[in-house]
Image (tube, rainbow, N blue to C red):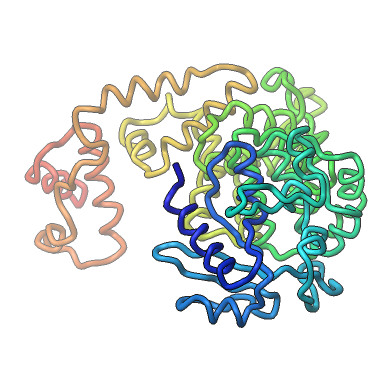
Length: 439
């Protein structure tokens, strides 16, 4: 049974066909169809020129008319309809200087990987394959179309896309394609930060994210796009706490312990939580001990700079930076006063940070005592909100004769602490506590 999306795509292709044009599904939808995976979008390649496409459909947007691409709206769906084309020279490592409209064979020859360069005729119900993409799909091989060096010279991002497809599909990268990536990895720095970020997220969102990290590392791409993570190699750790090995090995193990559907911020927190260790590494010869004093603070600052460099949204930056900054606090939870512990547990991203702590401990010394303690406390505190409504506020302090100013915050925090520790439970007790504090 066809999905509404596929049915709408077929109607667009049929309209083009009825007007005398070739109209085939192209790229990822063909790949996914052959894999037995439901396509999430459909691109259509056609012999119709952009002006003809716009004439045939009442609702269109010329998002890339100079490259032969028109977006056709069909009901609630939209489809990129692109004229068969061959690209002119690439001079910026991203897009061609121009295109010329041509044959399906030449159109296939300009695409990135063979598994993405097949067509499907929805009227004849057959695959059109000029590049042996179906063979590579069956053999689970990712191979660049034609000369891999040329493909990557045209668009440097294709190197990261190769890692992404190999990661998400579980494919092996063809030797010639792999060698071309290794030879040109440094050139990925020419790609915009936003495009690099988007590919990295697709890699690390995958359940196979550890393989993605390995491919990035072995290809040389990691040292260019995430040098802070690449520098974890060879950064030794105290064996009594980290018998697993250096910081890179530790981080890699943590990634492997996350659930397949772990939230993006948790994955990034794991990836970045120890990037402050290399710059804070020190060895005390008298104690014979390795130290990383302040690596959480340094790591949080580095994470902020890294995520800003890659143009992450501010909300995501704040969440990940907070997790990196707080990840060493968990070792002290059993020593916290009740009020401080409740405030710590009430933070909006506490559960995500607990998961970071869990895999941090599980991949090293294996002691999960702090998590067991927090679970016990969560059960103990479950009968009421961790942070209950305040007993008094600023207006109450004014009624006591105080003028608004810097004294208000510590006084109200003092009252909240007493309330959290169950030493007071009413407004009258709170006001009396303030009077005693003021003498």
